[in-house]
Amino acid sequence: MNRREQIIEIAEDLLDRHGPEGLSMRAIAERAGMRAPSLYKHFPDKATIEAALQERALRGLAASLSRAGDGLGALGAAYRGWALAHPHRYALSSGQALHRDRLPIGLEDAAAAPLLAAVGGDIDRARAVWGMAHGLVELELAGRFPSAADLDAAWTAGIDAFISPESSKATPG
Amino acid sequence: MNRREQIIEIAEDLLDRHGPEGLSMRAIAERAGMRAPSLYKHFPDKATIEAALQERALRGLAASLSRAGDGLGALGAAYRGWALAHPHRYALSSGQALHRDRLPIGLEDAAAAPLLAAVGGDIDRARAVWGMAHGLVELELAGRFPSAADLDAAWTAGIDAFISPESSKATPG
DNA sequence: GTCTATACCCGGATAGAC
DNA sequence: GTCTATCCGGGTATAGAC
Image 1 (tube, chains in turn yellow, purple, red, green):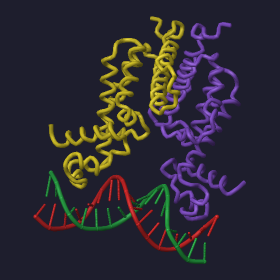
Image 2: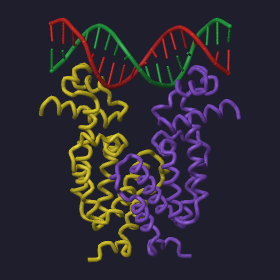
Image 3: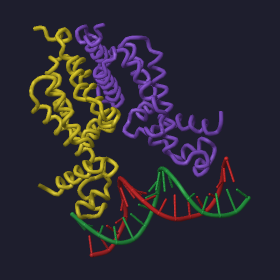
């Protein structure tokens, strides 16, 4: 593993521990045993580091989803599980500041593929389910639900709504 | 209208135009025709201003939802419409940094009431629908959908999933 | 209640010696 | 490829004059 990859892993660990606020060039450098200016010998700017972290996050989430069993329920559980296990990575990969220009093309589609398959190729339903999963995860991470809320039940209710018989009429044959 | 309210409205306008990044004490003061330190004669700190903006945002969204017609479809349209009309206010009211301690108690519940009613009081389904609405809005605002995506169709597909007959068995009587 | 001046943080990034 | 020194910007907040 070269120095560049080491630095990215350090940055990821910093992101996990202290969130995006803690991801400063100075902090990364300190953990890497150097001064901030030296980082610029490895990366042209901070945005490049962030793009690398986004790519890793998207790959990680995509891998988790592809390993999930078939069915919307397993997919939803994998999505939620990954997001809760790596909340800051999830935020980085799902947020406004997606560095699309620097991401490998097709990576987003790869992450979405298992979901699209699970709803029988119905793109509208796939987007609705994605929205639900994303929204439930964000609200949970933001602490918007009462601590006593039964979120397993909410997820089940939501998933059930999408796998009820007559709403799967999009895959008749 | 007193000076304090004027400043809050100035801050809200600044938030609308330039997002949370643009909401600095210096910028607020400049628009209010004063210097930043003078703001501290009206508010103890910036968090107080942010809390006021959150309260206004929550009230605005709640009002919009309560004005919406009955039914999940109308409710979803009102939710999406308000969020798209005031994206930064929506982000402030839905984000991680909710200043709960400074918000009037019951305000969150009031905003949620129409939704809970629309799903017949089933709290799990209400949370799932809320998650879907929030997620779809966030993904749309974040530009995560292709520009050609038919989001009206995605919303319809999602809402339909929750109003399909046998999934409304929670309201038999 | 406004001002000036300022203190004290933080951040990203560059220049140039070695 | 590392360093020191530095520049530039941003931010919240305080002190004290008026």
